[in-house]
Image (cartoon, rainbow, N blue to C red; front, side, top):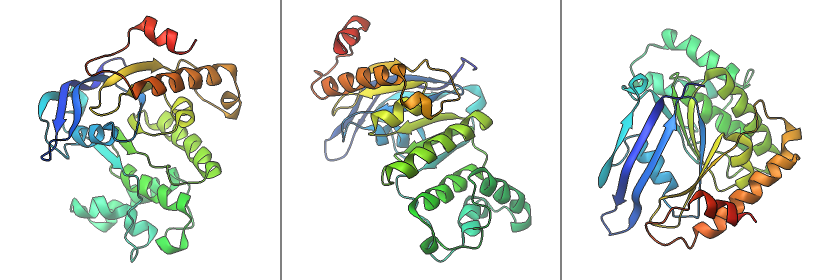
Length: 267
C-alpha cells in the first residue's frame, strides 16, 4: 500500500448558522488506498466530515488538503439513501453522472456496462427501481458512483437500512471491489462489526463537538472471509472499539486518549 497521504484534515472546525458546533479541531490523515471507517455516537459529525471532504460545505476553520494525485478531487459519494430516479431504468440511473457531465450516450455505454458488471447487476439493466430489492437498489447507487471511475470513495452509512444477510454480502462485495480498484475509502457507519470487518483503520469520534479520540489499526490481513468474523482477533478488535465508543460519549472537550488510556479501555 502507498503510504503517501490522500487527504489531510488539519484542525477543522464546523459551526452551523444555528450555533451548533458539529466539529472542533478535528485532525485526521488518510493515506492512499486505505479503507477508513468513521465510528461514533449519533450527531458526532461523521457525515459532516464526509461532506466537507467532498466540498459540500464550508469549513469554519482549519483546512483539508489533498494529495497530489487527487488535486482534481476525483471522488464519488454514496449516500445513505440510494436516491434513484423511479422513472429511469437501472442503466439510466447509473449513466446519470456521465449525462450531467455532457458525455454522449454511446461514449458512456462502456463505462455503464463495466459498472453494472462490477456490482453484479447483469440482466437488470432495463429494470426499474420499484422492481428491485433494497440491496439491489444500493448496488445501483454504488454503480452510479463507480461509473465516474473515482480514486476516492466516500460512503455515508450505505448499508444501514438493509437486513443483516444483505449487509454482510455487500460488505464482502465492497471489499472485493476495493481490492480490485485500490480506492481510498472513507466509510461512515454505526456498526462496530461492519467497521472492523471492512477497515484497516477505525476512527472513533467523540460526541458533539466531533473530534478524534481513538485511531485503531485493524491489522488482520486481506482478503477477509467469513472465518475472520468468528476469529479471536476480530472479537478482540470489536471489544476494543466497543470500549472506546462507550467512553467516547463522555470524553471532555479537547481530549484524545493516549495509547495507555486506550489499552486500559479494553481491560
